[in-house]
Image 1 (cartoon, rainbow, N blue to C red):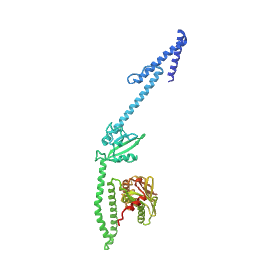
Image 2: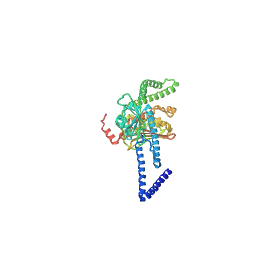
Image 3: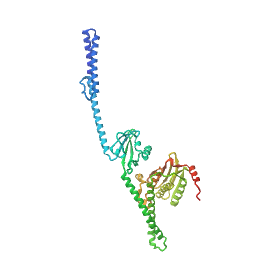
Image 4: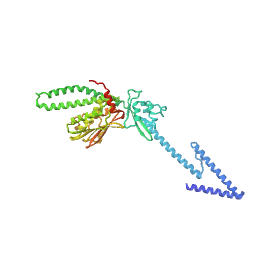
Length: 443
């Protein structure tokens, strides 16, 4: 590049020399210099014109054959153009491969912009959601998918778990939708047909519910005969131990069936729980007394009330959830351990927690604790008489009340189970008292 500029400066010096010589022959020196510079400028303008014309018609014309600094500029432009063409072809190839790969996916993929407007979607998404190209490109996704669950999902902006909807055009189809944010405010919407999984889940739930109902009657009969035999004074003493064990196992089976029926009822009820006022402080005081009685002074059961407010919801379901959490704490807390019940209210809603200093739970088991029949230590759970359904019931009760369950545990130090309820479920103490006072006397 330096040699080119040296040559250009030498050429300019040569033009000056020729102008001086020309001026010596034709008259005043400045006239010769002016003529030489004029010819030099015309030549430069010609080169500039050829460069401009080639840049505008680059796809039709070959690069102009000029030398010097202009030739170097044209060579630089040609190299930049070739590099640009290479990257452009490479990007086009990558985009074609991306489109082919997403088109081959069994799930629908929709690219959304900053305001959830549709930028692109594959063929599977069009089939699942009834999208049309190009009329739907640029439209907001919530204007095309109007399922209330999906609209709430977008507003909540919590995309950790997918949402399941039923498209209005296909009443027998279930779709799982999940947002995956990426880039500067953009996101991918993944759509998957989960109809088969939902049907299998429904069949499983129906089977469990029906089997539980069918088993309840024969177990009641067996328990009745065992109770009669246990009270028979003429029973051979050798049978006392076996009958006692059979009665214990019958009671355990009855508890499991009761939990299964309760869980089946909760799973079959998709609508939100009602808004009946619940006196939570009184309920917790009663649970504390029951916990102390069951503990038989082996555990310290304390209650900390930071608020007198209650909840709007289903009283039996809330009491069932709180009782299950207390039972778990009592079962897995050693003798002379401590179990603390706490109720508090803040701007985010209401919070109930059960903390213990028991055996704790390993971290790898925490995500699966709310699965039905899941046990951290199956031998210990069976010896304690647990059914493995208590936390699943708690999870479904909280979901019906718009709440969530939070579990914190350190192995060997204890666990804390917290129920978080939204602010709109709060029932002020004054409102609850007025509601109770307004009820008619049923005596």
